[in-house]
Length: 120
Image 1 (spheres, rainbow, N blue to C red):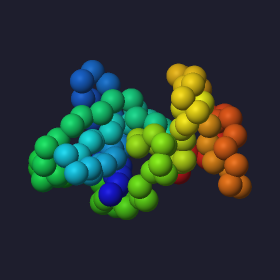
Image 2: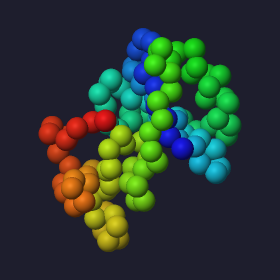
Image 3: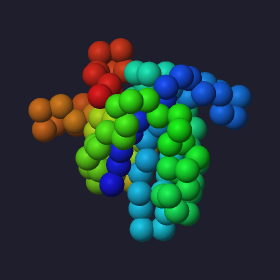
């Protein structure tokens, strides 16, 4: 399960400003992804929590009036922190090109262009 939220105000955490967060629950715990701008499509940092309740305790008071917004789980092989289907280019073939990404458009994986692809 994934959900995200915008913060009432940018919050300085670990030296970086955080504008929104995403919670991604797994069987072994949950990840809290931090985003360094309101329109960021991938996180700038992440934290691991053993219990989801701890995320709510740590961050609940910082979330704006929209609250938590549900978002579907990532497609298999895709980045867990991305708001759009996004995967490392070549990873599915065993030849990952780290730093290069592909996104799913009209059922076809195409090279990701952060300048033209929509964020959420």
